[in-house]
Length: 396
Image (cartoon, rainbow, N blue to C red; front, side, top):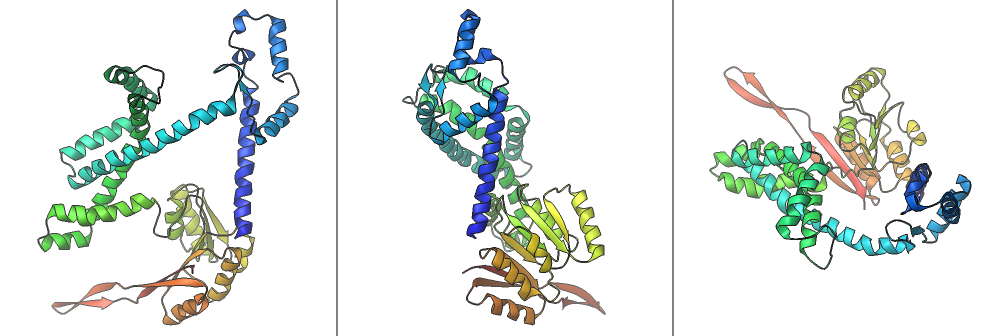
């Protein structure tokens, strides 16, 4: 686990280093006018002297090395435009707390407005609250943010009686930036909560409650809204996938699980492991159909093929070809905290899973069984299909 975390942190640091270095190099390509507040009044000798004092005439590798050395010691240089000769670190130290407060207030405001708005839209589907909410969402998402920010500034400053320069001591100056920052998330929360509520309202338990005489308002608030909030709050599937999760789909078949996992977030990497040639072809067709670049098909048999893959955070085992114990051993060696979900159809497999997980992992077993109607003369009898056992293994 420590090796995995170190690897992930190392990649993040390397990515940050590359991006900051590229931005630094690109900024050095801008015209020299940007370095001086009174460029038009300066002579060529003064310009060269100024560039020399800032170290901009040194070779680019020297500038990059000096920048990183100073940055790692907390020195980001001095400002030549915003506040002449003022420390950039000092400027950020004053501004950053205000920015964080604005971000928190904007998030809270978007929750306070977006969730009730989505609740009303879902509760009154295709009626005037839904239509008004849809119009607002379309307006926020279709119009470029810079456009409505401009109108908010033009009319908001007049309505509140504030100037264009921010004054943190006056609450009125906080209203416009916080409202502007919250608009995108208001649309997001309202849109997705409405969608989840509409999906929930079509489920069988809602129809059953209505048939028993439970009021629509009671069902909407106590059942539909509560269940619709689960995917919205998590914004991830029930397997608790994070946006940078690494998923093994062992025995992927045609890739239904791999596709579902990959569509949760483009940051998730899914390794679809399948040994049958026919299934491999269908898997690749499905990946092309859904345009999924974050699913990596792996042709081969587990557990041998797993050795070359990066450590997983989540694993789904749909088929093990009799090698379940070896597969779990390799997975837990690569990452002991891996969350594993195994589908089983026999009690022997379930017993094997519980034995392997004993003392190491917490085990949750869910049985799912489906029945189909069969016509016998003038009667319809429900004929049960074989039960399926879903075994979830997590760190004890």
